[in-house]
Image 1 (cartoon, one colour):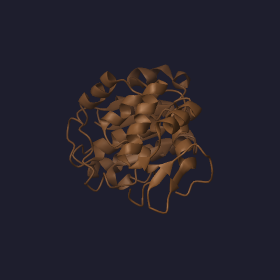
Image 2 (cartoon, one colour; image 1 turned 120 degrees about the vertical axis):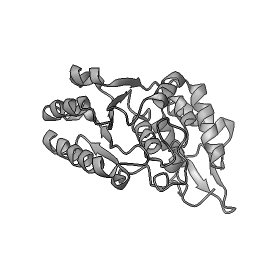
Image 3 (spheres, helix red, strand yellow; image 1 turned 90 degrees about the horizontal axis):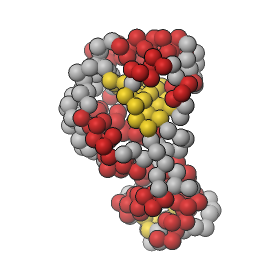
Image 4 (cartoon, one colour; image 1 turned 135 degrees about the horizontal axis):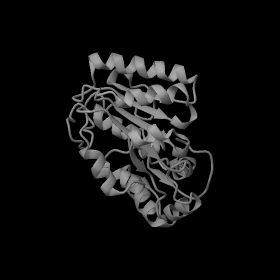
Amino acid sequence: MTANKNAETIFVPQCWEDLELTLQKNKLDELRRLNYGKETIALLLHGNAGLGKTALARFLARSLACHGVCESLDDPCGTCSACKLNWTSRRWGDNGVAEIDCTGGTPADVVDRIDAHTKYRSVCGVGKLNKSIVILDEVHRNRGVLSDRLLKMLEEPSGNVFLLVTNKPDVLEEAVIQRCLDYELRKPDLADAQNWLQGVLARNEINASVETIAGLVGESNGIPRLIRSAVRRRMRVGDDGLTTIDLVEEEAQI
């Protein structure tokens, strides 16, 4: 396991298959087939807290920003400059992606940030898409001016991609909801969550027993964010350099 692996990075989705835990495969296939870059696309990503809505939005943005991706979405290549960015942060402006927290500032401030990003990217583009990608996190928290101006942006034939992330879609204005394609994340079955966690740990060469994996998933009720936190608290690097996880909770070493 490389030195930069930790409980945050190992759970970053690396391929479309990683997303099947909380979004049905037919919905993922639909996402991959959308006509990106030809018309403005607005996706409403919603579901209960902790299911990976923001992770899904970031993965979509990464797939679109990947220089090896064109009209249809394959797995990110993992080698281009966009793929090598830290996709657990929000600093991707130079690659055409803006992640905006709608809880910060006034609605007018949020709109100004969207305007500045989309106008800049209309010249510079991103990857082969050559359009802006905007993630609006907690979009239900900032309404009024934002809703009115956002609806106008969604209706313009710009070809930009808007990813609206929320756990309260019912708070959004109906006109905004109607303009979006709906993707609801679901809480996984415990068995599915165990298989997913086992795959993540194996891929990252982290040792954990079947009993430990079942215990972590049961303790977290199958919710991905809580599983990640439980793993972070229990990751240990031994004297032999191997990383293991057990059910004894202490301060994590990595």
